[in-house]
Image (cartoon, rainbow, N blue to C red):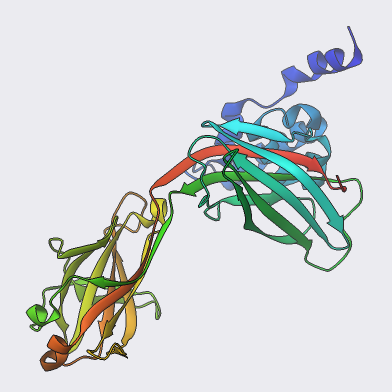
Length: 328
């Protein structure tokens, strides 16, 4: 039996069980503070004593990374590609220079297309303070592969530590994105010159609660797949037009609406935007009211226009790669 197998057999029995780790991490548990601190201390001691085994599970790696990120990254094995839900993520190249490191990350398979968006669900795991971002770089239609350039920089401007490793992970992929710009919305605004029924929402700009907004109704127009106009009318002398955006937590649907006069000039510009969701949680429609300073007698001279941004699919998974911070 070699050393690695012996080490594994000796240390595996003392590893914390998944139930223990979940119990420690769960915010729903209401243990006494001292009991909780004691449990965390025990788990921390066990994980620090057997770091090579801790990183063998995703949960163990997560806990160890919270306790000692440098130790977690040291023992995290290099893994240049992974596949989940039919999508493969791979490290194509790495470049390190001064206080920054860049990784060219490719995605292929599954729902991946040229519009693929990481939906701000990515994370950089490093044992130092840093900031990072990703940008879509290229699409290869022949292979169905999209490339992202992922850049991370040290916060204090110090050089990237030599010989270290970075783990990059992604949880969600947004695909089938479409943009429809300067579209005319088929809605006769003069039909909505009266006072409208209202509900209570909140202001996205001022953070106010209990702000009057339109009561959502039947679809009046659907300028883009997934975005519909569900109400229009006056509230306290201000003209509102409401857009139903759907579950923005899964589609990132959004739009901008404006009015144009007969000469094509923008008129009656909106002076505020309000949002409403039944619970504010994923799975519920979100509505947005656009507000305009336009008197009722002028509505017949205006047309409604908009820019619309939608997506058709959200793929969830657990994609994670680990690579050395050195040029390849």
